[in-house]
Length: 277
Image (tube, rainbow, N blue to C red; front, side):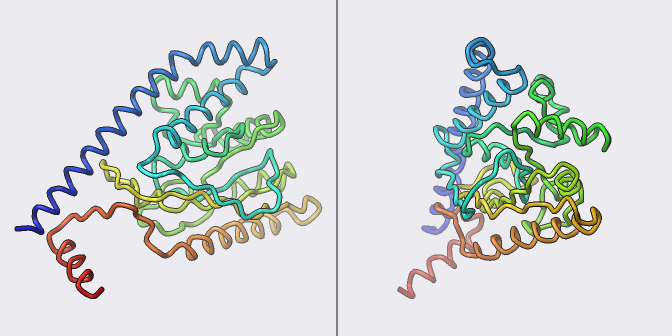
């Protein structure tokens, strides 16, 4: 009976945390859209930025607010393991959750995305196009042309080399797009390992589970533009996947702050472990 009450209390706490977060998410989003025109006006009129750059920076601030002022139940940690971070860069990261794009707000850098499904969302998709974000459905030539334009404007470009979210948390096959772009343009690859977001909100789940989330910034990879292009693309792809995989393997310890137990059996297991201490 006591164990059942623990499960019920944990579930209630989870629902309350989710209700709080979504309420704050709606409030922050509404405020963002209200002040966005003023932010863009100041950026263009006084800071001499172009519309796409001003809008990207506004979206970055929006993401930063969501992951710091309205945290995902725990602060998002940034672990930079690189001696020097080159910007602009082509940022490649593993992808396990719908919250992953927001996490890059913690870096506070001018950056665009190559994505697919967000362009289908009314209003949001329009903002993405105005911000210079690149739709992966536009065809390679158009994607390449837009990507080069973003990079040459001084903004970084964030790409999910797996092409979609991982369903089981394991690293999937990396595609060549980001690495082809690096070899053709000479811009460096910055591998980023996202840890914990898959447990926080994995694909198919509606309720968020309190969990620590970390962004690990790894050593940049510089393409050799004089080498054989096909060989260099494969080399960069394999190296980027290897360093991200290594960072994932190094984070094997559970990172959850508040354990959410979904069954009576899990509660019994926890109680039996406590008796051992």
